[in-house]
Image 1 (cartoon, one colour):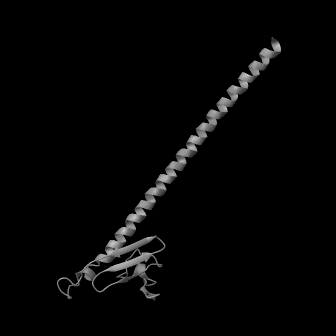
Image 2 (cartoon, one colour):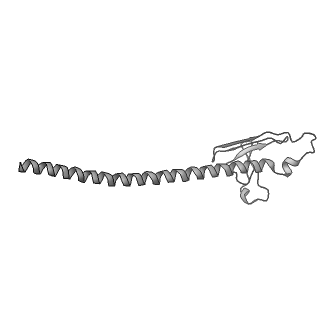
Image 3 (cartoon, helix red, strand yellow):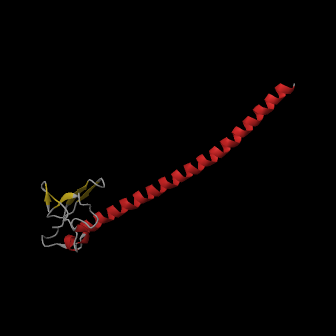
Length: 133
C-alpha cells in the first residue's frame, strides 16, 4: 500500500505470513525500504522513528540475506517490544506510587484525627481550669 509517496502496512499486516515492515507496526506507520537495505519508518501512534542504515549490495547486488532473514523487521519489532516493556514498567511504577501515596494519605488522616482529638482534649482541660479556678 502507498500513502503520500510512502509505503504503509497492509490492512491485515498483523496476520500476514510476512508482515511489512514488521509484525508490530501500527496501522498508522509509514516509511520506505530502499534497494540497498536502508529503511526509514515513522510510527505516529508510538512516537517511533526507526532508521536502519545498511549496505545490502556489498559485495554484490545478489546479496539478499537482509531480506531473506527479515533483519529490518525483526529489529523494528524488538524496538516495539522494548518500548512496550518500558511503558508497562512505568505504568506499574506509577500505580505503586499512587498506592503508596494513598496509603500515606490514609495514615496521615488517622494521625491528624488523633491530633485533633488531642487538641480538643487540651482545649477542654484548659476550659475546665478556667471555669473552676
